[in-house]
Length: 121
Image 1 (tube, rainbow, N blue to C red):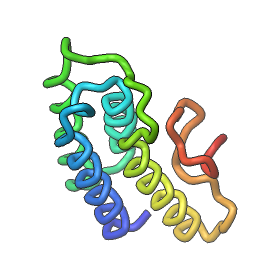
Image 2 (image 1 turned 180 degrees about the vertical axis):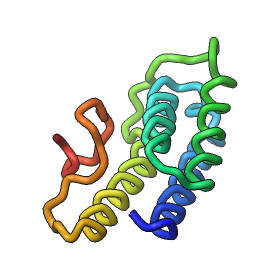
Image 3 (image 1 turned 90 degrees about the horizontal axis):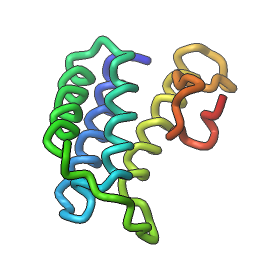
């Protein structure tokens, strides 16, 4: 994935998850924190200052919530999933474009439980 495309996808993810975190009900929810942990793990794969900065920010959020995590409230719509799915879709699209293979699955590994549906291995 090209640097500019990655930076745009990461910045969109950071803003989206930041907006979710600002919601009191989500900041310490296990669902939100699970998405943040997966996003931080995904960002370790990229050598971009934007990815590293967002990863560090996400890891800070996880540290702040430690000991205060609360169980899923079974919301009708899980708000943190949207920004993460858009991020994964951007990675898949960019990976397919960069590789020249329109059917490429993208950068997710078999352990990535929160992948967008079309990025399942």
